Image 1 (tube, helix red, strand yellow):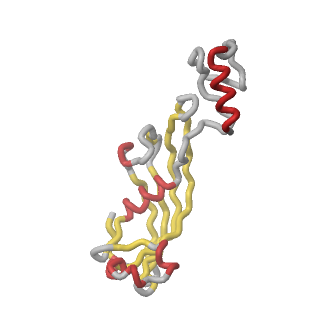
Image 2 (tube, helix red, strand yellow; image 1 turned 60 degrees about the vertical axis):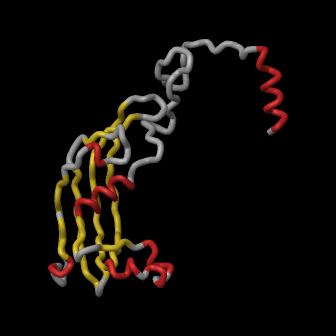
Length: 172
């Protein structure tokens, strides 16, 4: 969905739309959409700047990094963006420090679909976890450790490695 900058009304443009993205569009390779992505935003032109303020909502499924089980990841994120015309991108050496966090629009238009997808990808955690207390998988049997318990007995470390362990401890 392209918005022509010259065609924006003075009072701004209100957008309320559902987007169907492909799972391949996401930066998290194991993420899967469970529903469409809903976005509500207002686009305003103030001088040469384009202000986009909005909110996105989505439901995705992630794979936990510790226990490898899928879990639902709801997204409800607000964003506030400022775009400058492409001419300012060419002279960004002369821009003030406050302008470095701003984006640029090219050819007199902004692709709202790309804006929503970018904001959605920015909400993802660096390491997806089903819960902060997730213990992961047992190194012995491979089963998911629940409530901090596993029935496996972890044996004593190999005595031949004790000197190596002491050496590493001394260096710390």
